Length: 355
Image 1 (spheres, rainbow, N blue to C red):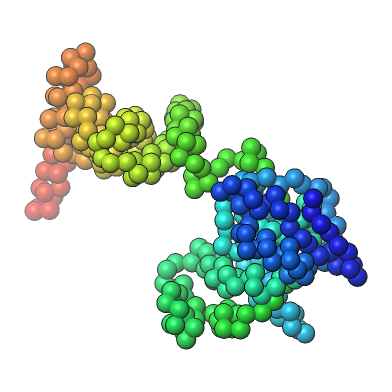
Image 2: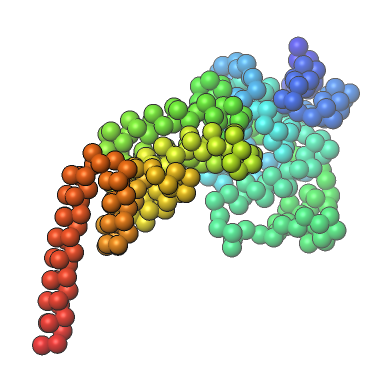
């Protein structure tokens, strides 16, 4: 059980041993556990507004909260305020966030509660670096301030913000005013790729493919291509861990090929021909006789007015699958007619230029 001691309207937190001993899923480090158990005043909580609902937190829970960071000086100097930054903070518990103490304190709150936590300086040494990252989210690289990883340079030149440089040079206690505005359990939201295990990533592929197919049938080609691209990206991440052409790599590549073809078909419908050519060519590198890849690339070459390559791909299609002869003939006849029409238009323009 959590040990709570009330002193002059202040709630002093102590951390449950079980919270820390989850094998390879520690919410907080053993160091943080040790010092908070030895001296409860390392984390001091003051309730400002009571919450509306008790929450049971488990690993993988997503928490969304607003925060205001202040110094513990007489003026309560504000360092950061998420409302001014423009967006709430989002954490997934158990993913070893750099500022571990935030994972501790949000788990001692009820939904919609507002509380102030005074944190010992030994627990907030990472805060300047977290703050810098949050301040620069979404900014182009040219607007981000310098970050030195060398210890000596860091002490001398800092990280680009004077107030954060001061915290690095002169560590001090900080106060976090937290408003817990949303809690989502792991089974209530779709995990981002970075949250998944390798097994979860692999299991997500059929579902993503089906979602893409549904969107394609609805003629939402942009939506479908985005879903297919996500699935392709996941498989490519998994393939990076395997040696090319080994059994595991080949198995993953076989899963990727139909997704590449589906993605190419979406792009073909959008008349993005060079993207079609690129992705079909990727398929043909490992499956040179893939009829769908040849046919879609051939149609894309028609779209780019590349007659020789279009004819070459589409003729190979008929060699591999004679049942498509009529379809290919119609495509090539239409293409031939389009080329003639294009040439006539160009000739007229040339004649007009020299009149």
